[in-house]
Length: 275
Ligand code: HEM
Image 1 (cartoon, protein in one colour):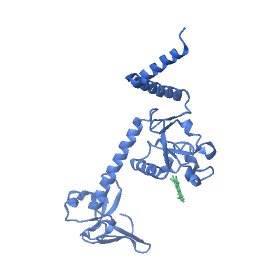
Image 2 (tube, protein in one colour):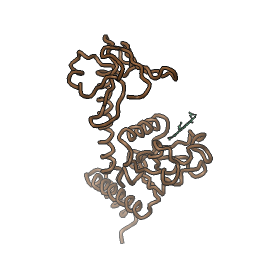
Image 3 (cartoon, rainbow, N blue to C red):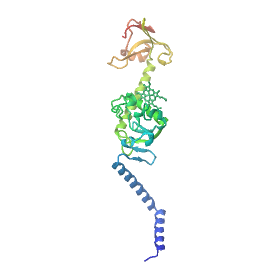
Image 4 (spheres, helix red, strand yellow):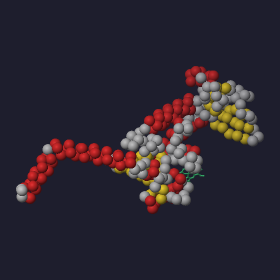
């Protein structure tokens, strides 16, 4: 039988060897890997758990998020497009009994646009909204990023169990890009064909007219009011000030109509009934 001190010497040498060699790094990376796997399994087994990632972000399941509706049970958290924020400091809006309490403990992204705070309205499914409406939800998301504390992600529709964006999240991103592009096109369209000034009088009717600043577009020409049919084949129209000599107008002539009773070169037109 070896004396106790010899065993301790062996043990100490073994630990030293591990520390001073690559073994330590292998062991460390294995431990890290299996630790992460164990956490993942635990997470799968108990869906009400939260996982803290290495970067400090938390992955919430919907049942984990559900409890954050009260200051006594952890605080007030909400999710928007799958991103979770601690909105406790906005207790006057989100606390129990307050106007926007329904947003807490869940992802009710659609209701940020629809204003439908019923159970079915408070859904994270925004697929039936327009691209522009989705873009508006993104503006809310920016608001939460700036105003409140970001906590992590909600596992489900927009993020998978590893916190990576899902296909649905990518589709959302594409739709936002389309909305941005449309905004750009609208801005370009407005600078080419600026909106008219409009006023209404019960006796004389509606007056539309152009100035060098109408529609908030500063320019060195005034233009004449025209009915501008912005979508081919649609009855949708607005009043645009057009420079009839411009190439832009000449190339898009078929999208414009003169106001009935208004001369071609008149900068102000009055009409009683919408043409
Ligand atoms: C789609 C409908 C609406 C949604 C989704 C919505 C959402 C919200 C949210 C989330 C907040 C809290 C913002 C924060 O954290 O500071 C808020 C605040 C507020 N909302 Fe609404 N809201 C809606 C409609 C309205 C309407 C119609 C009114 C007025 C008649 C209104 C008046 C207010 C006011 C006064 C505040 C508090 C502003 C402050 O104290 O800073 N909201 N709204």
